[in-house]
Amino acid sequence: MVTKGAPSPPDQPLSLAALSALHRGDKIGAIKIMRAEQKLGLKEAKDLVEGHLQSHPALDSSFRTANRNAQPAGLFWLVVAIILATAIYYSLGK
Image (cartoon, rainbow, N blue to C red; front, side):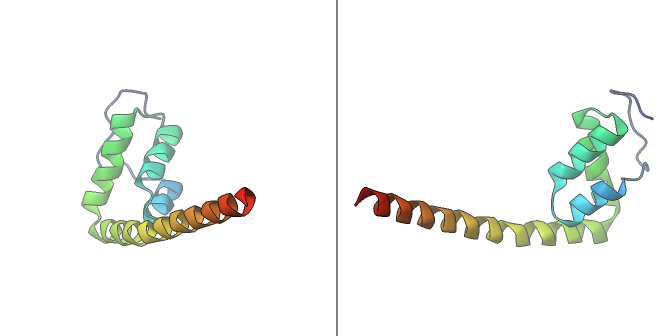
């Protein structure tokens, strides 16, 4: 177990949950998972996740693809929410 504030070894593997988060394009989620599981500080966990991405180009590519694919879906749901809110506003106002 790594104590808070202690430097983590660069070759320390990420947990399956953190790797799964990266495959979904959720880098922040992976950092949160590593902080909770390894009792790391924010900087140490961030460095660990980013170092892992840099040393595994295939995973980095997968992360970038998932992140790019997630952005349009979020925009879609934002537009849907605005349209629904507008429809509800007009239907209740009249």
